[in-house]
Image 1 (cartoon, rainbow, N blue to C red):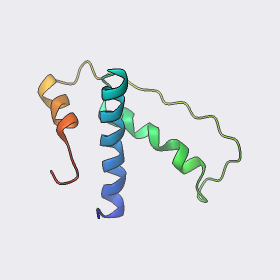
Image 2: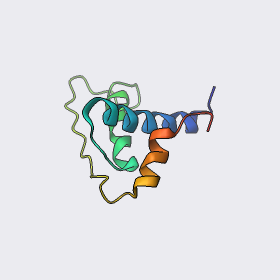
Image 3: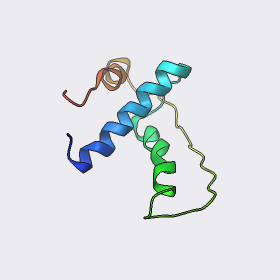
Length: 78
């Protein structure tokens, strides 16, 4: 199992990969971090009874193709 800090990073990659696979969208890695927001809004840390969550996904078109491919190929063991 990954350490807690690495679990957050792993989720960011998984969100980016899922968005690309399901919707064909190419976003920056940092933008994918926003998809974890509902987890935080429903946790004891920031308990919010009825949240609305928006993710501003900055485009990944300026990310070089080779670098974006590394994001897609990433796995916890790499």
